[in-house]
Length: 251
Image 1 (tube, rainbow, N blue to C red):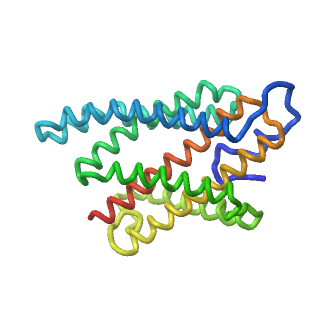
Image 2: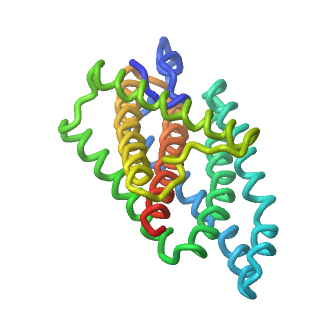
Image 3: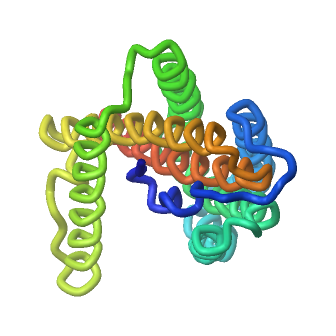
């Protein structure tokens, strides 16, 4: 079994495990809720800081006020994600810290997008929560079944999108060239964003399946934190892609 989520690796859910409390799906969902709450709290702080600095219309001052938290959150989040991936036993500590760091970054990004497109953040949050609930319902009711072909298709497509993003980042960094349909607001750009949002949603299904399999195999209780962290990674990606899609539609 495998997931396209890079932090959900087969070996972390394989036994044998020592005796003790076991991982459950419900426990993982509850911890995911806690991580989301932490991200909202820190995101709100960065949002308010940006709003206060932008009150006089000086966008540059507002960006300068939140830039340390935005970039610091992104870098810290990446580092914590790496630690969590290679040391799942520490996820009870690293997962909440990751949520806090990502909250700082997402708060700054969201505040900037809200200033450009009023109302976009609430729409993005509602859509993200809606997609999460829908995917969980479809998975739990068996409407979407995770077969080997389904899994391989989502994994391959996700890898292709990540590679495309890396190429685009490299081109923009070193040549100032960018891949048009990733950023443009035309029909092709919106279609591409719809495709990526759908792919991120399917990754949620793979994550649910991996977590459920881990619980069935008797994974230890701390793996609930690891599973929640993995879901958080996918949700952050999903939210950012929905935000990108809505901004393209507004333009």
